[in-house]
Length: 384
Image (tube, rainbow, N blue to C red; front, side, top):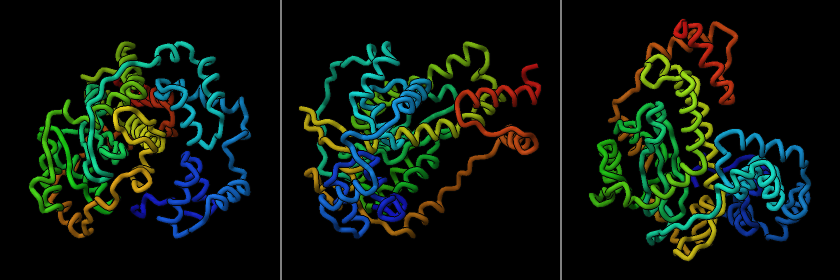
């Protein structure tokens, strides 16, 4: 595990971190042994959890606080997920709540949403991979692009762990995508055996880098987007559970004549007010997905939590040590060849100037984002 991915702190903070992510006791023990040089039995771990007052059975919780947290999620992009997703979201916020309590509250607070999320039949192709870091699947997401927020993603094929999930001004520029790749290679300390992308021109530089680091022309594979099974199926999950809220939110702004995608100044103002909010939400989506439990299915899908499957594949029948190690110098040498620098627009500099010379603050919620957006347009005299 790369140093940047290892939780730091004393033993209590480290154990609390893994416990809050929902890992089973044996997985926590393996994490401690493999990445923290701490060997303990499950019995000792349970004793530590009792000392730290961390428990899953009969947890102590404030029902009113849980209700408020659920309502807060239901008022934003988290409203599309089911009660299992909500239960895991609460756990990531250090709220240990029985699943049946969350299910009952969801039925009470969001009856229409529960009805809409009834199970659907899904036909899947079989997917085969020996272990984590054998194949990374890369693709861009264009559903938010008409509003100025293209997204780019990479998923490990075996563990289904999200390697990166970024929104950028353009997901079609080869050097932007290549930087995402190099950042992740540096973070995890190596590259995959194979890299899988569609035939878009934005993937050319990244494909060349993958083949260079592996010294193998077959280390990258092109294919059609529909055939890029792992990531295309994840985009469907993202659309159903998250991005649909953002799409509806932005469409409502257009219908209310608050935002016009064809207006360059409004587009720049929208980016200034919402790009961090959307990236923060993507970071939350990534953390939620990487720590949620994938259930066993009849399609030979490996069950478990993506982070656990990625870092502890030996516990789930996967091959370990498939990551192809690369030296830091090689990565930086490739990065030096990237000459593209995103230019700061005059509008962005203007918005920063206004923020620096007024009492305005950057938004923490979408409601605050709309208020800042309208205020900046009023100051610029655009709405007059």
